[in-house]
Image 1 (cartoon, rainbow, N blue to C red):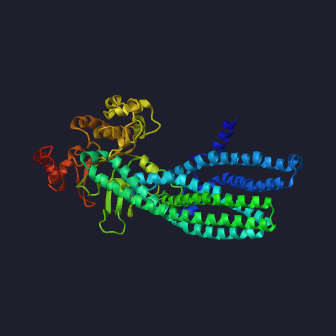
Image 2: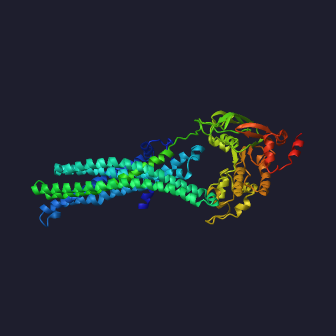
Amino acid sequence: MLNRVIDWFNTRYSPVALAKNTQPPMGVTKFTFYFINQFKAAFTLRMVLVAIGSVADAMMPIFVGLIVGMLATTPPGQMFELHWQTFLWMVAVIVLVRPLTFILDTLVRNHAIVPNLVNIVRWQSHWHVIRQSWSYFQNDFAGRIANKIMQAGESIESSVNMTIDAVWYAAIFVVVAITVMAGLDWVLLVPIAIWLILYGILFTIVMPLIAKHSEDLSEAKSVVTGRIVDSYTNIHTMKTFSSDEHEDAYVSESVNDHAVEFNKLMRVFTYMWSMLFILNAGLVISITWLALSAWNNGTLNAAAVATAIPFALQIMNMSGWILDIGSNTFRQIGTTRDSMDTIAQPITMLDKPAAPKLVVHEGRIEFDDVSFNYWRGKEGTVMERFNLTIKPGEKVGLVGRSGAGKSTLVNLMLRLFDVESGSIRIDGQDVRDVTQESVRAAIGLVSQDTSLLHRSVRENIKYGRQSASDDEMIRAAEQAKVAEVIAGLVDPKGRRGYDAHVGERGVKLSGGQRQRVAIARVLLKNAPILVLDEATSALDSEVEAAIQDQLVSLMAGKTVIAIAHRLSTIAAMDRLVVLEKGQIVEEGTHAELLARGGHYAQLWERQSGGFLDIKGEAEAAE
């Protein structure tokens, strides 16, 4: 029965729902309520239930006072006969009202709110962050971003629920306590009033300090996480360069910084608790002394004294609990603010409203007066007023030294960055006027920095086309000359072949094997435009020769842009475009460029003395 009730509360909210406005706002209050408002009904119900529970708890000192009064005034043997109605009321509150209220509150909090809110914050934050521009991720640690997203869910849930549990609960309790005390003797309100003022001052001073130090601590923790994850991600480089001591120093520096921030926060806690212990001692002593003095003077009866002193003790116990929860709440607020600064950044690379999808009819690519600089407003423009037209079905090789702008052109065409001026058009459609997803769907890319997902080989290859059948996937793997490699794969969990997982970034495969899987992925995608950015750089000569035939087949009927430092791999292209500092300095066929004896011929001659007879090529061109 209880399991069915729990299941009902579990399903009140979806942990992967999206808000109507998918841009989280800046400002810690707005950022928090952006998520809380999605659980408005559940939190409203919680506040009602906690208020009822607080009133029920405030009845306990009153019950003690009533019982003491009965003991003082009731003859033995007549207790239940005379007071059965009062006892029935007490039993109803203690046995029915209080337990049922807190059980229902537990169901709402633990099953409707906590798991769903924590995960909806993470999901919506991830959904927003994953749509940030490429430069957003270039400027930060992946581990640091992930840490911000993971901690945001728990910090928001904890801060709001703890505020309801402590502040709201205590506010109701104190109102009841003051009302009861005023009814007993208004003099008892004096120490409570003084205590509330001093407690409020302590709270007001300490909590902002806790929030600030918690924000600093959260940032320090994210740096530690980022550096540790960076070490794990680049473990191969670490091992091959024997850099353990350097890495130890790099990570330990951030751990020490984290310890410094932690100590600052703990210092605030020590001062806070020391002051609270003194305040609470004063409260209990003063109320007890006033109550006993009033009894001694005959102005308070025993029942009133038995009510007042337990109220003082409960307030004392509650004050520590509230301060503890309050400090944790403000720690979570600091963490939330730290996460917000990363998560709520506006997305800079947006589609235009109601942007249509790119429709590729022929595959013509035009770079029209394109200017671009990675660092806006600074000197060192990557390219300025660049013009290049690639005809439908043409195979163009981009040649040039590192930094000449070859990969930049590809990144601009994929709209990983936006041009500063000019335009890039595919079949007459500016890539900024259509959806980013449709642009990237129309372009198949095999890059030199081959990165695989830490998933199965099947998922990695089918990333090219999710709807592909297993037969199509296997055919692509065979064409990429990687099927035999896949057949022999076994991961630590015993998954084999296409079900085997390849490790983070494909670390369990060699560079050449990763590149072949990437080629299989693009073969399966079968996009009308193909970009080969050092596509065979990690392959040995034998495998490269075997794959070249498949690449020729893959390029048939497609517009192709190929980038290669090893010029022999692109010598057969329809046209070679030589770049230097973001400008075209030469273009033509391989033979034509050799005959000119310019930049291309010099580059060719430097590569292993030339894979071909340069003089013979030049003479043939003449």
